[in-house]
Length: 180
Image (cartoon, rainbow, N blue to C red; front, side, top):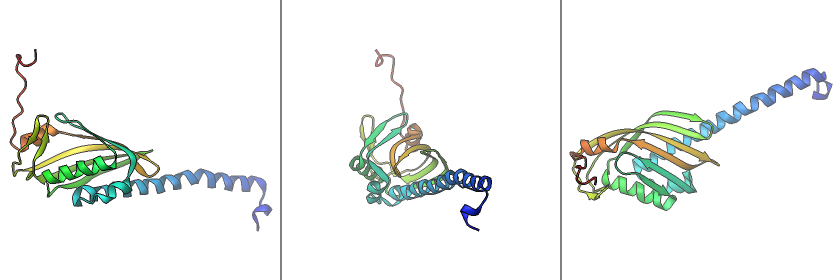
């Protein structure tokens, strides 16, 4: 039997099912592609594969790295490569693992844990801090917006004060005299 030989109501129902089922297939495929992006991103941090930045990030990519002590906004692939190099210089044995991954619409939301030993200088609010040789562990959450299959913008939230405390630095609140 050909499609033209099918009764009109049956043909309409079959087409309706095909159309309704299509977005679910497309969502599953895009979720798979977005998960692959998040997995590949770990290679940038864990292995220092800077070439992947051009592959994964849109040219106008902006990363908002938000923590209590030093907010960093990284704009563009070249700046992102410098930022990753700086972090990996501070922590050459850096290892990031993905603890949880959620994909919703055009967003990747991931919870992660990073570990590393501080053997290089650290950027700080008052300039470079000396290496301590201490091992740290910090967890955070990233929210990444995807446009045309690439990272367009991300927000990374983690506890910078916890990292400094693990490294042995003291955080001293300002005195009343310095606040005037």
